[in-house]
Length: 244
Image (cartoon, rainbow, N blue to C red; front, top):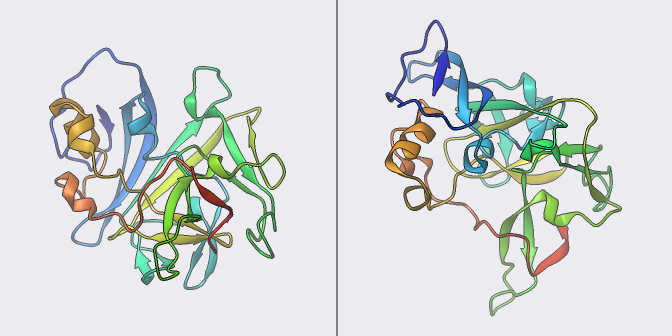
């Protein structure tokens, strides 16, 4: 993995290979409170790209001081979560999706303002393939408790309130990591901060796992991401609208 930063000591030595690469940017909060940034050349693989490809430039993230565009949120800034109130951002990553047919991230989802009820969302949102929204399942446990899960935003596409789009030019996409897995208030919808799920060690070779963890200088091992707040589902057996 290529790392370009005058202030960065690579957290893990990464072996070079001939796999296709793409450029990504990261910023993270050091333990002393400083913010550092780096440019990476990441493998062009879905698992790696999903770390970045959630919220398009301009997406409003709710903070204690009001909505802030995702690109203006830096590590150390607080965002509002549904489960825990205000939490600090530990990491922000971004990459550019291109209209090229070879770019998996080229197909985005546009969610129209009020598409799922009043102020849900409050304005049109443009979201990447890694964006997940909190959804309520049809099959609820005995006793009436709601069963909730996180599904890809593309799964809620109905051709009217939400639909696939391919921008004519490049779009910068972002993702955020918080101290715990949670859902953030994104334009009136509950959408998750980044979490890789629970099967990193099973899905990656030793070298790939080292490459993956090198993208997160504040993380030492997969377990440091903590448990999932809600399960990740592909979008099956879900109600017609996302959770607020």
